[in-house]
Image: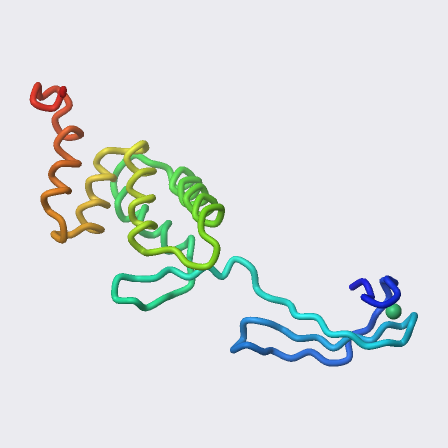
Amino acid sequence: MRCPFCANDNDGVRDSRIVEDGRAIRRRRFCNHCKRRFTTYERVEGLLQVRKRDGTCQDFSRAKIERGLSAACWKRKIKQEEIQRLAIEIESHILDNYEREVGSEDVGNLCMQYLRDLDEVAFVRFASVYRSFRDAQDFVKELTPILSPNDPRNSR
Ligand SMILES: [Zn+2]
C-alpha cells in the first residue's frame, strides 16, 4: 500500500480488525520509510444484495441462479456448461447495471429473458414457477405467441 505521506510503497500492517458488521477490514499501517501511520479499509466487492418481495435481502448468488436455470432445463437437451454460461451472463449483466441492490423480480425477469432465447420449454417452466399465479393474465399474454406461433391470432 502506497504511503499517503511520502508515497513510498513500503509499509507494515500493525493491526487488522473486522469492522462494519463484517463488511470491512480496517488495517492500521506503518510506513517504514517516513515512519508515519495510516489506516486503510478493505471492503468486500460484489456483495450485491437481492431484495425479495417481502422486503428482506440476501447476498446475490450466481449459484442460486444456476440452480433455478438447471431446474427449468430439467430433461431438456441442454448442457450444464450452457447453463453455467447463461448464469455468468446474467450475473455480469446484473453487476454492470445494479450497484448495491437488485430486486428479486428483476433477477427473475432477466433469467426469463435469457431462457427464452435458449429453450422455450425451459422458459415456460421457469416462468410458471417464478410468476406462479400472481399475474396470470400477463403470463398467458406472454406465453400465447410462443406456444402457438402459427396461430393467426398471434400474427398481429
Ligand atoms: Zn511514508
